[in-house]
Length: 448
Image 1 (cartoon, one colour):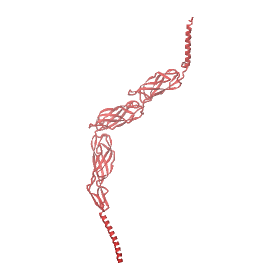
Image 2 (image 1 turned 90 degrees about the vertical axis):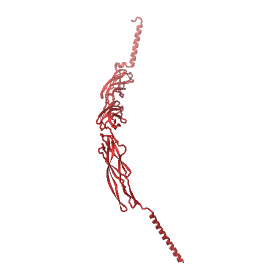
Image 3 (image 1 turned 180 degrees about the vertical axis):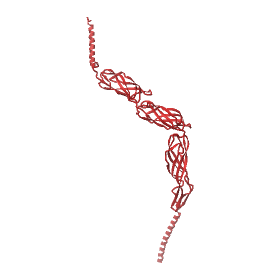
Image 4 (image 1 turned 60 degrees about the vertical axis):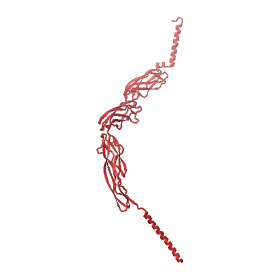
């Protein structure tokens, strides 16, 4: 009985282990069967479909340099794909344009293309990329609508053949196509500056600048007006800034004369101004040419200096002094007059002298009548003077202050006696005493 029970216990444990193993194996089979098999994707059709367009405005004027943005749009679609287990996924999609290369061609349009071919990279379906080209519209470009060829080269996935369960052979096709974009050249003139002629332009004065203009374009500017504008903080400021031209035909030249003024602090050098023309084109639009910068030479302002030795005056005396003024500027000072300011110990009742016209580098002599007090100290004094003159446009101008040196010296001889206050007092006493004596002598009885 005991043996039977013992064998039954062993059998029960063995059965339990076997049943547990079978249950675990079944569970693994169930899990394996229930898990989805990984599937791959295969595209059955589709390829790139590229179109081109200019981004933004496509109207341009002759004589301008622009950055032309061209949009490359891929509207290619993948019409059919297969998702199935055992298919290896493809790295590329048939509708993607790969390694896109874009070239812009003029094809008779009046433009100069400054950029080489541009690489756009890969352009997937429903994607757009913008490529920019530097171009210049020719100065003599005729108005009209032109077609610019855009040449596009790219590669795309034509077919993918699976080999085995883990390899794919890709076959690519290379395609080259030419598309066109409309390019509009507006009716416009092109402005050239041929010559700049300054007249009497000096710091602190007014003068003229004559600008020779030329229409080097292919169209006529109607009701054209030449304009001169100040450039930034330039010390040269237009006074008369517009000149009417009228009909400005292709090849026409026109001399526009403008009046300008120059600030007093301007240095002798060239300063910028801007010239442009406003006009009506063939479409009755009012346009402005691009502003052209010109350089205007400015001469130094008219300055004067005293070039003779300091004249000498005697204390207590009155005399005429001579001052020689030289024109150190770059222009003629017309109808010049010199004035001197006499201050203690000097005075003057004739402080104005006419000098006339003084050319650059020339000099003129002014004569002033000066009185000096008797108590003036012997030394060299500096008196202020100025010169009023007229410039080339007959505008009245005043020079900067000119220092005139005058030396006071000691009186000698009779002049020294007559200017000595003690001597003058003694002489006055003697004269008064003599007069008194003469008067009393005449009043005595019996006097003759």
